[in-house]
Image 1 (cartoon, rainbow, N blue to C red):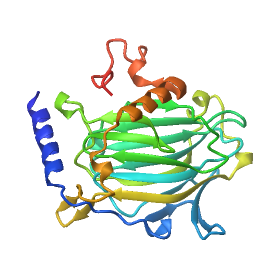
Image 2: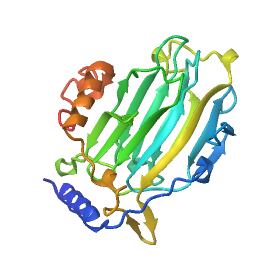
Image 3: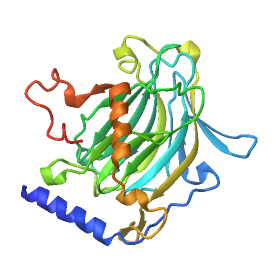
Image 4: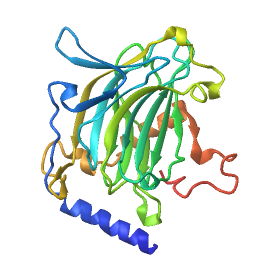
Length: 291
């Protein structure tokens, strides 16, 4: 184990040892109590039951973005999303987490929903950056139509792993392997963001299908934002154990979770950087084979 890896491992152990109190970011009655609507065509609506929905729309001139008011170091973040229906080719709806430090050292967890022509399936594109290094793309075809109803997308991030879940089903796991000199997001707090933007140069069938602006505006809907996470307390981050809501902090996939993850891999995964021999003719990245 290298000197930097030993230091990272020891710091990671200290993080777990000293986060003794669970601090829950309370779920506000309205999403907008926890979110900043940054720019673009963002609308806030209420259904008949008083539940708040935020819409993000895209047209030829303007993207739309919101983000969490708070930054967090570790947490479980859930959002219900209903994606752009019909011809959504060229559009990308996102749910992601991002640090605010120097870009060359940034951490990021990405879920990007790549639109498609009418009748063709969405692709869920995922990527994870640690200390500025990304290139960990995996893609999935969802087992339902994400435009017909809301579905719950979750990022679970703790000192042991990052999990991406869809309707409670794990689809991707990244373990903390800093003991093997593999970067892992561990020290920098992140905000949650959502956006909709135009990526017609690559998003749909490799850029072959362009955005049909006659269909604009393109709108995705968001509701039920929920976060249970570590929060800043003066110069420290308060996390840990001691509450019925703290299971996320020490969570690791059990045997049933591993079975579900393998099933998603076999049935729904359409791209994995860890098996792309064209991209890596001289050997796969060191984390491949142990995720």
